Length: 344
Ligand code: MG
Image 1: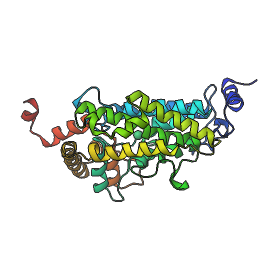
Image 2 (image 1 turned 90 degrees about the vertical axis):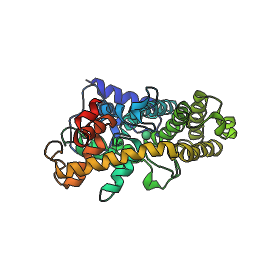
Image 3 (image 1 turned 30 degrees about the vertical axis):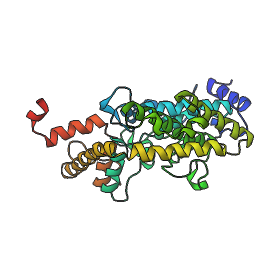
Image 4 (image 1 turned 90 degrees about the horizontal axis):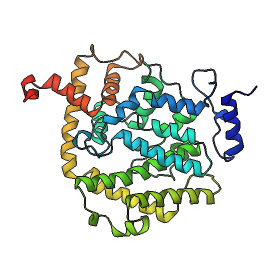
């Protein structure tokens, strides 16, 4: 008799688009596992991500504005939830696999360092071979979580996680090698941008780093006057344009994509590299650099023995990358500041 998982797989087959990635068609896991009784492979991956420690630590990691400073700024966790929500809305509207989309979205930023991009830069300067958060996200799920055994996720979720990032690069028109292999992965790639260009404008206005008048007025005309309407315009455009292309790939119409890229350029110029916020963030580069050297000299207490094939430097990098902002600050106080200073 058909069990619940088999029934869910059948419902996917009957209801999803022929372009959807069905859980029954997954290329599978590195270590073979028995299928679950009532969850599909991608539901199971999503649950493993939500239950892992790196996921919980996202709540105390900076997105753009140092997270200890205000309760309403986005953190990596709330960013991740916004990406997931936007991506699921698009996946559902296109009749693609919402569970796969959600799993990729919830896992996409697990490799982020404390202190946002300055943390990433500090580790990139320190580590041989550099550091990038998307490679680290993959490393977290493959090699670091679950005491070094990894989460043993399906190929499609790992592919989507490792190919979500674009920096200032092409969002949906990148080389095939840079693009996720599934449409669900492509949805997360665009949803990440939709989430951050919108919430970073909102947070930058809240912080007083920019004023409404600073944003080119044409952008508001094209995208909408309000935060919610701008997200809506972008999501609506992805859905319509992708349907019009027969779901060969996930696309946006030119006018909206150009507006999104202009907004991203504006944020890079005015917010991410704003001298004031940069100045504060540069202090955090010193914190991570000092901690890195400290743990290279004193690995005993904190540095894990895995992945066994990696040198100490890389494992110290893993430890630092995994820290929350507040944990990094606490360790810095403990190792570098006289006790009386912290009491004052
Ligand atoms: Mg992200």
